[in-house]
Image (cartoon, rainbow, N blue to C red; front, side):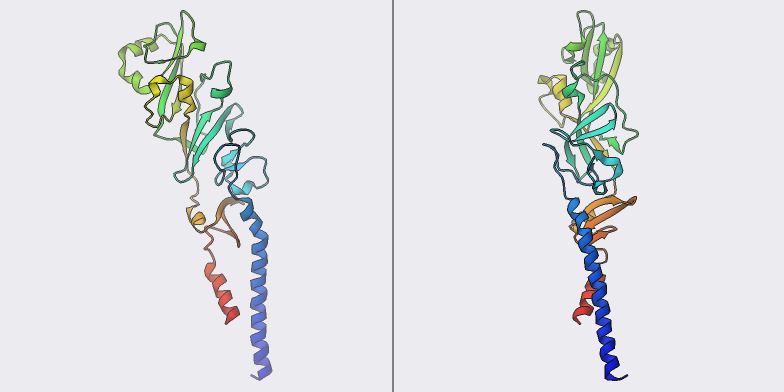
Length: 268
């Protein structure tokens, strides 16, 4: 091998590496927009919104999972389970995959003064009820007078028929209460996260429901992505970790050895 061939070979090798590395850098810069787009968002006075949740109407739907769409249009973000069921998001606990919700009708339904009229199912949602919730029952149009420790629903009562709310544990322990319940026309069960509150006896049913209830969700854990300073997303039906140097499959450390290898060859 002559000197000219050796110099050309080494130079061409380095030029090829530079071109490959430059293309990687260019791709990273173009993909960096997705990383920036998936920064946590604010929505009114509610919690920050990030994966697996995403805000409806915004183009960056890839920042969340399709099943976790929320609406942002008021004081708090809203989670819709159907066309008639709206829940305000009070808090999102990303670390343990749980969310604290309160039914919007508690604030806005003046016709029934915030008293629920039907049970709510979460079977067709990505959520399930947290075992920390307490069951809170509403009984309507009872012909017998309920005990004093129950929570009266005055707007659904009159001189002959009584409506009230009560916790499940009281139903299971009170014999007289069960005899009252047998005279009621209908019952609705809701869930509340009382969080070991000691002031339940002084509250009314609306205040108790405003405490909200907890749901848990199961989603792809993006802990590895976040630990590598990435931002989780969902694109082309797959989990994506958006990083400052472009998207990765699981974390920003994916392919790190290759980038370091190219750098080593360039400076060698």
